[in-house]
Amino acid sequence: MMKNSRRVILMLGSLVLACTSTAQDKTINDGVFTQAQVDAGQVVYDASCKTCHDMRFYRDTLKSYDKQPVLWLWETMLGTMPADNPGSLMLEEYTDVIAYILSENGFPTGDTKLDPDNGMDEIHILSP
Ligand code: HEC
Image (cartoon, rainbow, N blue to C red; front, side):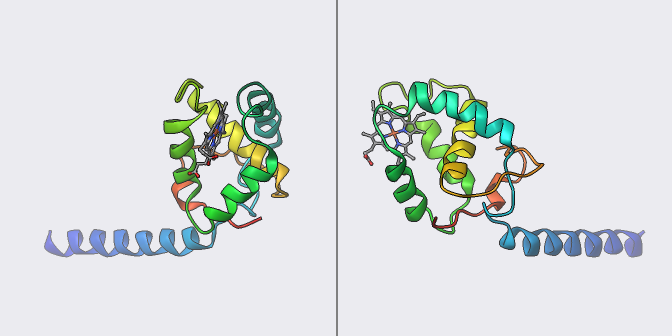
């Protein structure tokens, strides 16, 4: 009994280690959003974000979030944007807008969807 549970704890420990070591390496340069999200995000962006900011603004924002998790940016947007009606978009729309902004700043699309419930706290922003 004792022996078994100790083995489980050891296994869990190495799982956690494995996760943190890959997590630290993952960035927005690794194809972490899809082309479909970029396309959907452009529609949201044009309708809800374009009036107050230009792409240069988002470039500067990405610079200021250098090495921070994408989830933090997502949460900030969710809580404060659009400034005239914060939180008014669907969660998925905020995610799509981020995909569009990343794409416009030169980061590549991939096969995996960007998903706030799945690892977005472990994907790090890079300065464009
Ligand atoms: C009515 C005008 C308005 C609209 C529409 C708007 N914003 Fe903003 N946004 C602001 C203002 C004002 C600020 C804060 C002052 C600044 O940094 O320019 C801001 C700040 C931000 C920031 C910086 C947050 C930070 O932590 O530095 C981001 C990112 C952002 N907006 C994204 C968006 C997105 C995405 C949309 C569309 C969903 C959007 N904004 C729509 C006015 C607007």
